[in-house]
Length: 499
Image (tube, rainbow, N blue to C red; front, side, top):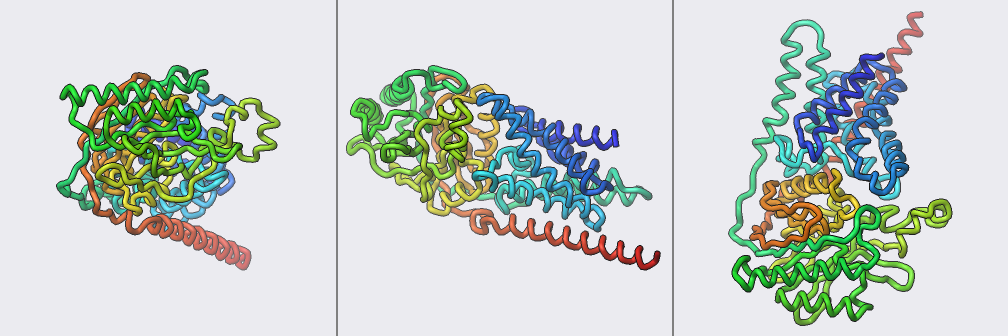
C-alpha cells in the first residue's frame, strides 16, 4: 500500500508540472501513467481513495489561483473536484481486468472530465488533461476531436506506459505497449494542417491595467479602469497617426474595461465615444450593463466611432460566486464575502458572432474559453477570428493567466481560427491558427499593439463533428465497465458452484 500511495502522490505532482506556467507537457502522460499504475490490481473502494489522493495532490497547486478568492474556497473546490477522480478510479479498477485496458481507462478519463465540465452549478472544466497540451505533440488531435480527444490521447499514452511497466514475462510483452505509447503522440503529427486563405485583418489590442489587486482589483473608483482603457486606446490612435503602428481595422478592449454602464451613465458614454472616435474604427468594448433594476450582464459591445453602441454579445457561462450567487438566499445569509457579487448577472442565450469592421468576430468572454460548446457554437455561427475578452485582474501573477492562454492555443488548433485575447491586466495575446503565440503582453502594465491576423473560414473535423468523439469514447468506457462487471459476476457464480 505505501508504494501505491507514493505512486498516486508522484502521479498527481507530475500531472501538475505539465500545466502552465511550468509547461512540462510530457509529464502529463507520465503522471497519468503513475496514477493508472497505483490503481492497477486494487479493489474499487481502495482505488477510489487512491484516485482522490492523486487528484488532490494534482489540483491543489494547479488551482492555486483560487486562493485569491480565499483559502476556504480553494480547499472546498479541490475537495469537490477530487470526488470526480475518485468516481472514475473505482470503475477503472474493474476495467483493468480486461484486455486493452489502457483504451478503456482513457475512455473513463474522458467521461470524468465531461462530468466535471457539467456539474455542479454549470461545471468546472479547468485543469482538464488537454489544457496542459497547449503546444505539444498531442495538440494536433484537437483538430480531429477537440479537447476530449486530446485528453484521451494523453490518458491513453500514460496508461500504455503503465502497462509496459506492469507487464510481466518476456521483454516483448513490455515492448508492445511501450511502442504504442510512443506512437500516440507521434501519430498526432499526421493530422492534416490547414493553409492560409489569403485574407487578413489588422486588430488593435488594448490592455489598460487596473489600480487595485486581489478581490479589490478594480479599486474604489470604477471610472479609473474605464479611463485607463480609454487613455490606452487614445495612445494606440496616436501611435497609428505617427506611423509607429499600422492602422487597425478594429480594436478590442478587455472584459470589464468599463464597469460603469454606458447606456445609463452619460459620462462613461462620453469617455468611450471620445476614445473610439479618436482611433476611428469599430471597437469591441467589455462592459457591465444593467438589466432591469436588480440584474446585470457581462457584455461584449460593438461601439462604432460614428453611431456609438450597437450589436452585442452577453456572456453565457457565468462564474458562480463571481458573477452570480447560486442558492442566493442561503449563501448570502451565511457569507459576507458573497455580497461582493452585487447585482446578479444573467446569462446570454446566443453565440458571439458579431460584425466588427470587415469581419465577423467570434466573441468569447473569459471563463467561457474553457467550455467546448460555447467556443464551438461561436465558430459555427461564423466567428473568425476568435476574440477572448478577459478580466484576470483578481488573479494577476498567479497561474491562471498562463493556463487561460494555453486554452486559447488549443482552441486555435481545434477550430482553425486565430485567437486574439484582450485582458485588463494581462496576459493579452495573439495566437495563430496553428496554436503559436505570436505576441503577448506582460502582466500589470498598460500596453497596446496592432497585430495582423489571418482570417480562416475552413472548418476542422472537430468543429464539424462537435461532441460526437467525446460521446463515442464515453459509451465505450461505459460498455467496458459493464463487461467487467458481468465477467466478475460470472466468475463469482462459477466459484460458488465449484464450492
